[in-house]
Length: 175
Image (tube, rainbow, N blue to C red; front, side, top):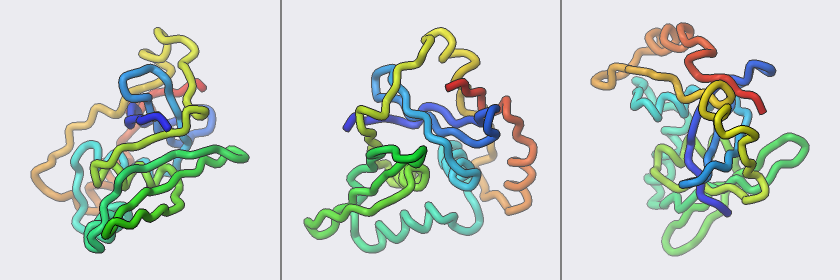
C-alpha cells in the first residue's frame, strides 16, 4: 500500500461524472476514481471548510466513530473489479482492529474529516501520460472557491452555490 492524498476533484467531460484524483504522496503517480455527486459535494465542502446546519452522512460517520471511542487509523483503496473500486476503513477501538468495507468515495470523505491517512494498492496507481499536460488541461485543480467560513450554509445557499459551479471550475480529465 502506498500513501496518497486528494490531489484534485473534477468532472470527466466524457462521462459528465465527478472524479477524485488521488496522488502518491511526494510523487507523480495518480489514481482517478469516478464518484457520485453527493460524495463529490461532501469532499469539496470539507476541503473548503464549508459547514451545513445539519450534519451530512460523512459528518455523521465521524461522530459515530469518535462517539464509540474508536480511531480511524487509515483508509485503503484495495482493488478494482469490473470497473468498481473497493475500499475499507481500518478502525481501532480498545486495542481491537476493525475492518469495515466501504466505497472509496465514502472512505475518502470520512478520512478527510478524521485526518486519517489514505492508502492505495500500488497496482492501482498510474503514471500520468504527459507530465506537462497533467499540470494543465488534463487534470484540473480543485475549484478556486472562496466560501464564507464564518457561518453555516443554509440548504438554499448550498444549492445556489453548487448550481453556479461550472465544469471548468473543477477541471478537465483526460484518462
